[in-house]
Image 1 (tube, rainbow, N blue to C red):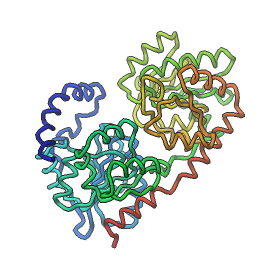
Image 2: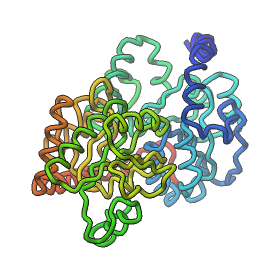
Image 3: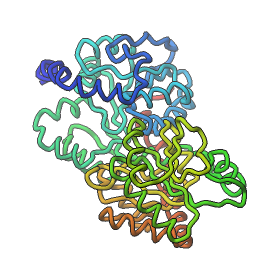
Image 4: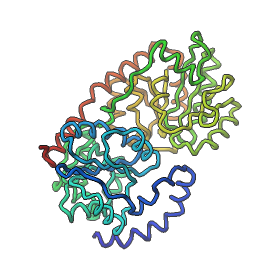
Length: 433
């Protein structure tokens, strides 16, 4: 079956190249070390007495989630060499600039036979860790032919991926058969993975690594006010605006938030709307939406701090969602309203105790959202109209917001511990010495 994949890959790659090339040009930031995607990765200097672990984390969220695992591995096996690869330019930049205890950072190579083979020859790992759903047939085949164990950690299956694998027949063996073990993010994901992978691969529930991310402390009181003033969201210590956050928004959701903002303001509330889009390259589209709503906007990438007369702050910069989340009084989680689907992570908002609302399309975070809703720590809106109504009601109810915030923080704290369980599984496969 691998030969069928090897034959089809270059054909499908060429067909899809215009789409992906257009996306890369639109997003920008891909010029640095672009050749690594085609196998130009450097040879890695290794500690001769230690093992080499190759970790693939797609983008920012996965990179942040794997950091505690990397730190724990370096504590337990200080002489190991860790290679971290990413797919997106934002993930690459984050890994290069902020992730410590990594010996080498590179782009993940195209899953084409000669390219993958060349990078494997250069990295020569003793163990591979793949994050969440990063299952590439050629990459896994290269591991299998070298008898290198591969672990899928923080593993999850969205509704769409689950349906696709159900229809894949024997071809799903290309990606599941080479796996040594799967560490699932939730019992629901574990059940799906057992159904797809069959009895050949052991599946264990370790929990979601994103709960164990070491978030900076939530600013409070004077510190929070100073940060708001520095960002231009407040003018002086007596100015205490409510911060309504659009977290990782997708197309159409900014317009809904504009209506919510206007309704909250019409009720006499001192409110500022902060929009952090999932993709910064949508800034022009979002600006057009905001102008059509007759709202004054300030753009972080060009204006810096929010202008005093701006009603909306468009935070179109990379890696700052966590900071804005820590300052929010109320958040809407994006990619959750029709026609968008899958949802963005609610875990950062929960970690900071921010009351949150999201739409019905959160299939990528089913287990997390079910846990939030069962503990009354978040509110799901079944439609755009319902989301508007709930957000406006919460803006007028500080006691309810406080109850939700307390519940979210408690729920998040109760789900920690996945890093230790994940590292224990790694130790079973690659014994520490």
